[in-house]
Amino acid sequence: MVKYLNAECYKAFRRKYFYLFLAAILALAGAFMLLLRVEGMHQSQTGDGMIIIQRVSVPELLGVLAMALSVGLYFCLIAADMVFSEQYKYNTLKNEVSFGLPRLRIYLGKLLSSVLVAVVMCAVLVGGYLLLAFALFPTGADRLGESLRTFGLCLAAAFPLWLGGLGFFTMLQFLLRGSTAATVVYVMVIGLLGGGFLSLMSMFIPALEPLEKLMTTISLNTPFNLMRTQSPESLMGYAWALGLGWLAVSTLVGLVGFRKKEIN
Image 1 (cartoon, rainbow, N blue to C red):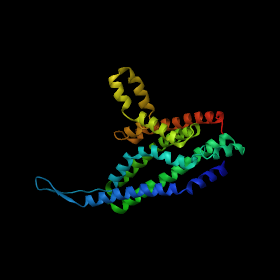
Image 2: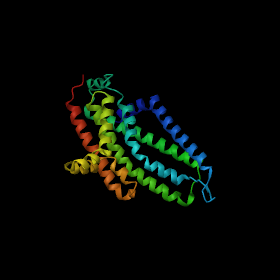
Image 3: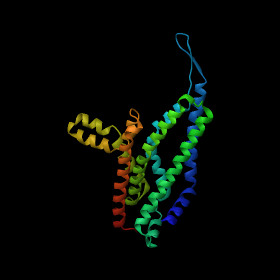
Image 4: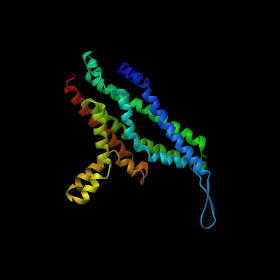
């Protein structure tokens, strides 16, 4: 398994796609911070003649990043796609099976490789964001410690939810022929469970209310939404149970389906 993981990660980290994606996201973050920094230097005058100087510091930027952690559910698509890389289209998965590699090792190897790639992506993006924040803005020392603690807790609650999304997308990649189909299904399922569509429908069709409550409870987006009004500590158990539940169920379904799937 270790050799398999090394081979999969080696292929993923050699792809230009990986570095271009990271560079593009960090460039967007840098542009956002530069614009915010320029705006922060402006002064505005109220109707009463009072001068207000807009001040943004690192704690506020940590809050912005915490609010955006749900985007990681979609960044998981990038990590998993870098590892799986259209293997049905290019018949490379057929070659692995024909070579005699156990299907259990193939499935778990690609899943674990996707997790490793996703962790590296997260470390680079979060680290780059923090470096830019500290380089361009005041540290807000009086609130920095508490802000870092809160952000760390939000990150800890988000991690299992990302794992759940990664496991679900890996299952789709193995069961569906084509990354496009897997991506469309993933976005539709995650978006439907996390959006307000069912809530809107239940307003007009009250019989759907129990279904709407169930879908909201199992949605990977729900803990992210709740973190806007509740402390991450209070949601930690729910987030881990939910994320690991998605990971376990999707991995089990994916393994069973892949074992029975004819590779040609």
